Length: 441
Image 1 (cartoon, rainbow, N blue to C red):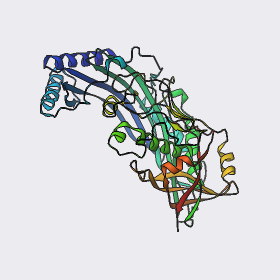
Image 2: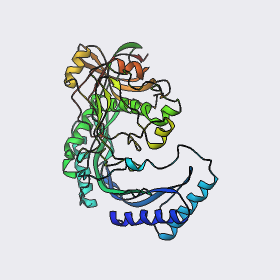
Image 3: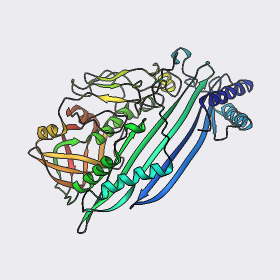
Image 4: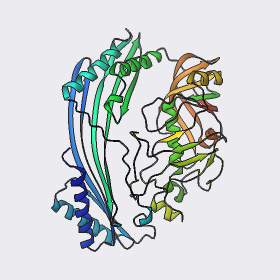
């Protein structure tokens, strides 16, 4: 990487000095540098090799409670000075905002724990291509019905990040992320289905084997062949672990302080109220070693800590940065930048046991479209998956819409499986919802 952590710390120190010289009462800056390699293959041939190297910084200055922000990808001293000048000019023309300003000084992280996020992968383009080729070959050779490929790719990225502000806080850390993915097409007659799989980790040696990723992509595509439409009905629904992560994102979106103070969330005024059955617990663990969502501090330098987000079914907190906290006359919860490593407690069943518990209903493995309204909680998504009868998968289904309301869906959550094996910062198994409307023929 062209910029070390120390050099980025010098960049933000110079930037804050420049802001002070230009009369800013407060200032903050974040700077990053990243480098990576992405190799894509398709049908047994190398299709793309891309090396990336970029950096950038953003600065926000405050003149009292007037705020201005600017950014640049040029880290030379002259460019930094011009960027600070631009932010200062903007601030002088903005209106005063009583909620504007840095997070309170006493909330700054007093120490930066090493979360073991940085594991360089010294892989050449040829080696990365060989891994992707093995992955795609495993998928294409898995079954004669795999008729085409959208390719496989190997990706590695290393990032250095530093945040600093005029409270005297300076924090930074390096991190890596590596991944392997494959997407193939299965076909019989005039029917074709596409599906994919992937693996992602901070450590290259913790990625799933290329062959297992390819094989799972093939199995998923084949399982969708001969999909049917179903009649419109109301029935129980199981959201696969991947799709259940989206339901958690819908919850967290409604918990964001910006949505709450704008009266744009169905969770407004519901702090400490019961949203889920009393067995449901959702916690955040931002300091998990090597985890994809871990961070020692938030985007304002506030220390991140383990938190209960849902406790015995009750909403225990909103997700606040310093600005939304002031708007709500509350205190920042260290969530500038979002939730880190959230986990919902399982009820102990395997996915297979969860389907048996459902009996007859819909098992969703793919969702399409946005379809979630933070203001009202209304939920409507295009979906595909499998129809389940007597606890067993009967046949694949497609071209359906699943609809409900997040508030009701949360109340109707009956179980969470143990199949939390998806490569994601969201730790959840499949969810069983008591009843939803499924629109088909």
